[in-house]
Amino acid sequence: MDEMCLEGIAEGVKACTRCDLGAGRHKTVPGEGPCDAEIMLVGEAPGAEEDLSGRPFVGRAGKVLDRALAQAGLGRSKIFITSVIKCRPLGNRKPKAGEIDECLPILQAQIDAIKPEAIGLMGNVATKAILGLEGVTGLHGRVFQDRYVVTYHPAAVLRRRELQEDLVSDLKKLKELSLRRK
Image (tube, rainbow, N blue to C red):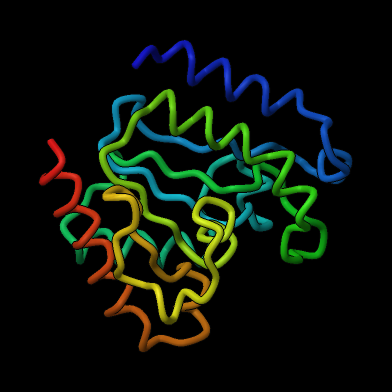
Protein backbone atom coordinates (compact mmCIF):
# COMPACT_ATOMS: atom_id res chain seq x y z
CA MET A 1 0.00 0.00 0.00
CA ASP A 2 1.26 3.43 -0.84
CA GLU A 3 1.66 5.46 2.36
CA MET A 4 1.07 8.63 0.33
CA CYS A 5 -2.49 7.50 -0.37
CA LEU A 6 -3.24 7.20 3.35
CA GLU A 7 -1.67 10.60 4.01
CA GLY A 8 -3.79 12.06 1.22
CA ILE A 9 -6.92 10.65 2.83
CA ALA A 10 -5.90 12.17 6.19
CA GLU A 11 -5.31 15.56 4.55
CA GLY A 12 -8.73 15.34 2.92
CA VAL A 13 -10.28 14.65 6.33
CA LYS A 14 -8.56 17.73 7.81
CA ALA A 15 -10.06 19.91 5.09
CA CYS A 16 -13.51 18.28 5.17
CA THR A 17 -16.61 20.47 5.52
CA ARG A 18 -19.16 17.95 4.20
CA CYS A 19 -21.27 18.08 7.39
CA ASP A 20 -21.78 20.36 10.38
CA LEU A 21 -19.35 18.45 12.63
CA GLY A 22 -16.39 20.30 11.14
CA ALA A 23 -17.57 23.58 12.65
CA GLY A 24 -17.27 22.32 16.23
CA ARG A 25 -14.11 20.24 16.06
CA HIS A 26 -10.69 21.01 17.43
CA LYS A 27 -8.95 18.39 15.33
CA THR A 28 -10.01 15.70 12.94
CA VAL A 29 -9.24 12.12 13.88
CA PRO A 30 -8.63 10.24 10.62
CA GLY A 31 -7.02 7.27 12.33
CA GLU A 32 -3.54 5.94 12.82
CA GLY A 33 -1.47 2.87 12.27
CA PRO A 34 0.70 1.28 9.63
CA CYS A 35 -0.36 1.52 6.00
CA ASP A 36 0.17 -2.23 5.64
CA ALA A 37 -1.77 -3.23 8.77
CA GLU A 38 -3.23 -6.71 8.64
CA ILE A 39 -5.89 -5.70 11.18
CA MET A 40 -8.08 -2.61 11.25
CA LEU A 41 -10.32 -1.58 14.13
CA VAL A 42 -13.29 0.71 13.48
CA GLY A 43 -15.05 2.56 16.28
CA GLU A 44 -17.91 5.05 16.35
CA ALA A 45 -16.53 8.60 16.58
CA PRO A 46 -13.87 10.58 18.43
CA GLY A 47 -14.48 11.60 22.03
CA ALA A 48 -13.28 14.74 23.79
CA GLU A 49 -9.67 13.62 24.28
CA GLU A 50 -9.43 12.37 20.73
CA ASP A 51 -10.81 15.67 19.45
CA LEU A 52 -8.06 17.54 21.30
CA SER A 53 -5.20 15.22 20.32
CA GLY A 54 -6.22 14.20 16.80
CA ARG A 55 -5.52 10.55 17.72
CA PRO A 56 -8.04 7.68 18.02
CA PHE A 57 -8.79 5.90 21.28
CA VAL A 58 -6.58 7.89 23.64
CA GLY A 59 -9.19 8.53 26.36
CA ARG A 60 -10.75 6.16 28.88
CA ALA A 61 -12.11 3.85 26.17
CA GLY A 62 -8.65 3.81 24.63
CA LYS A 63 -7.17 2.50 27.87
CA VAL A 64 -9.76 -0.30 27.85
CA LEU A 65 -8.86 -1.05 24.23
CA ASP A 66 -5.12 -1.08 24.98
CA ARG A 67 -5.65 -3.53 27.86
CA ALA A 68 -7.85 -5.78 25.70
CA LEU A 69 -5.34 -5.72 22.84
CA ALA A 70 -2.53 -6.72 25.22
CA GLN A 71 -4.66 -9.55 26.64
CA ALA A 72 -5.40 -10.74 23.10
CA GLY A 73 -1.71 -10.70 22.18
CA LEU A 74 -2.07 -7.84 19.70
CA GLY A 75 0.24 -4.84 19.45
CA ARG A 76 -1.52 -1.52 18.93
CA SER A 77 1.38 -0.29 16.79
CA LYS A 78 0.63 -3.00 14.20
CA ILE A 79 -3.09 -2.19 13.87
CA PHE A 80 -4.78 0.63 11.98
CA ILE A 81 -7.34 2.20 14.32
CA THR A 82 -10.03 4.57 13.11
CA SER A 83 -13.71 5.42 13.47
CA VAL A 84 -16.68 5.72 11.16
CA ILE A 85 -16.92 9.44 11.98
CA LYS A 86 -13.72 11.49 11.84
CA CYS A 87 -14.91 14.50 13.92
CA ARG A 88 -16.40 14.55 17.41
CA PRO A 89 -20.18 14.94 17.55
CA LEU A 90 -21.02 17.81 19.89
CA GLY A 91 -21.98 16.70 23.37
CA ASN A 92 -20.58 13.26 22.61
CA ARG A 93 -23.92 12.32 21.02
CA LYS A 94 -24.40 9.40 18.67
CA PRO A 95 -23.60 10.33 15.05
CA LYS A 96 -26.57 11.15 12.83
CA ALA A 97 -27.31 9.09 9.73
CA GLY A 98 -26.34 11.97 7.42
CA GLU A 99 -22.99 12.39 9.18
CA ILE A 100 -22.31 8.67 8.80
CA ASP A 101 -23.24 8.85 5.12
CA GLU A 102 -20.79 11.72 4.58
CA CYS A 103 -17.91 9.96 6.39
CA LEU A 104 -18.44 6.45 5.08
CA PRO A 105 -16.63 7.04 1.75
CA ILE A 106 -13.56 8.14 3.72
CA LEU A 107 -13.61 4.95 5.79
CA GLN A 108 -14.08 2.89 2.65
CA ALA A 109 -11.10 4.66 1.05
CA GLN A 110 -9.01 3.75 4.11
CA ILE A 111 -10.10 0.11 3.89
CA ASP A 112 -9.32 0.05 0.16
CA ALA A 113 -5.90 1.66 0.70
CA ILE A 114 -4.78 -0.51 3.62
CA LYS A 115 -6.37 -3.78 2.49
CA PRO A 116 -6.42 -5.31 5.97
CA GLU A 117 -6.90 -9.05 6.28
CA ALA A 118 -9.40 -8.60 9.14
CA ILE A 119 -11.53 -5.70 10.37
CA GLY A 120 -12.98 -5.37 13.87
CA LEU A 121 -16.25 -3.46 14.02
CA MET A 122 -16.47 -2.05 17.53
CA GLY A 123 -20.03 -1.24 18.50
CA ASN A 124 -23.38 -0.70 16.83
CA VAL A 125 -22.47 2.38 14.77
CA ALA A 126 -19.55 0.66 13.03
CA THR A 127 -21.48 -2.58 12.60
CA LYS A 128 -24.49 -0.87 11.07
CA ALA A 129 -22.38 1.44 8.87
CA ILE A 130 -20.39 -1.43 7.34
CA LEU A 131 -22.69 -4.44 7.50
CA GLY A 132 -26.13 -2.85 7.84
CA LEU A 133 -26.71 -4.93 10.97
CA GLU A 134 -27.62 -3.93 14.52
CA GLY A 135 -27.45 -5.59 17.91
CA VAL A 136 -23.84 -6.16 18.92
CA THR A 137 -24.91 -8.32 21.86
CA GLY A 138 -26.26 -10.96 19.48
CA LEU A 139 -23.59 -10.44 16.82
CA HIS A 140 -20.34 -10.13 18.77
CA GLY A 141 -17.70 -12.71 17.97
CA ARG A 142 -19.30 -13.58 14.65
CA VAL A 143 -17.37 -13.30 11.39
CA PHE A 144 -19.06 -11.72 8.38
CA GLN A 145 -17.90 -11.81 4.75
CA ASP A 146 -14.82 -13.75 5.93
CA ARG A 147 -13.28 -10.44 7.04
CA TYR A 148 -15.33 -8.56 9.62
CA VAL A 149 -15.56 -9.44 13.31
CA VAL A 150 -18.23 -7.69 15.36
CA THR A 151 -17.29 -6.77 18.91
CA TYR A 152 -18.22 -4.41 21.70
CA HIS A 153 -17.05 -0.84 21.71
CA PRO A 154 -14.52 -0.31 24.52
CA ALA A 155 -16.81 2.41 25.96
CA ALA A 156 -19.41 -0.32 26.57
CA VAL A 157 -16.84 -2.12 28.73
CA LEU A 158 -16.52 1.05 30.82
CA ARG A 159 -20.24 0.76 31.59
CA ARG A 160 -20.31 -3.04 31.90
CA ARG A 161 -16.97 -4.49 33.04
CA GLU A 162 -18.15 -8.06 32.42
CA LEU A 163 -17.90 -7.39 28.66
CA GLN A 164 -14.09 -7.21 28.89
CA GLU A 165 -13.73 -10.99 28.42
CA ASP A 166 -15.95 -10.89 25.33
CA LEU A 167 -13.96 -7.99 23.87
CA VAL A 168 -10.69 -9.87 24.41
CA SER A 169 -12.16 -13.07 22.95
CA ASP A 170 -13.41 -11.18 19.88
CA LEU A 171 -9.99 -9.54 19.39
CA LYS A 172 -8.36 -12.98 19.54
CA LYS A 173 -10.79 -14.13 16.84
CA LEU A 174 -9.78 -11.11 14.76
CA LYS A 175 -6.11 -12.06 15.20
CA GLU A 176 -6.81 -15.68 14.16
CA LEU A 177 -8.76 -14.49 11.13
CA SER A 178 -5.93 -12.21 10.02
CA LEU A 179 -3.45 -15.08 10.26
CA ARG A 180 -5.75 -17.53 8.49
CA ARG A 181 -6.33 -15.19 5.55
CA LYS A 182 -2.62 -14.71 4.81
